[in-house]
Image (cartoon, rainbow, N blue to C red; front, side):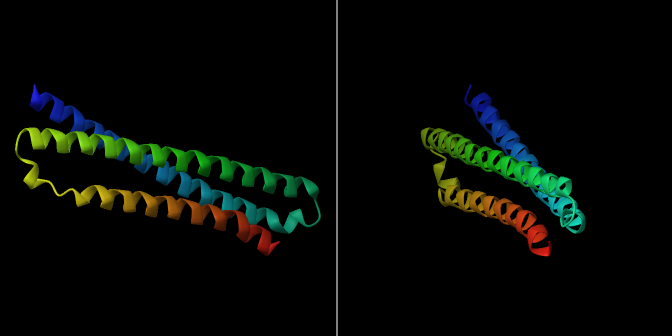
Length: 134
């Protein structure tokens, strides 16, 4: 039974990683697309209000998606912590915990914070640069 539980937890960790990758890539790609589109709108937005409205709609989209991604990454971080803590308990019960370094959990948390920082910074750039160009 222990092997089954261990496999289940490691499968959940793999799924968690895939989901996080999708969140990160989606946010960065959307931020870059928003940057490109809004940068393209800057010239016409000076004279036509419809382009300015479109720029603001893209800003709203960027903000909403980034908030969702940050929330998703935070939940992924919490899930990973719970799963790894479960593995550590299982390893202690099986007396093999000496093979797993507990500091890995802190490294994962740092990595999540770095991912969130990248998403936030690309979002800020996607929002600010077109308006600075304008």
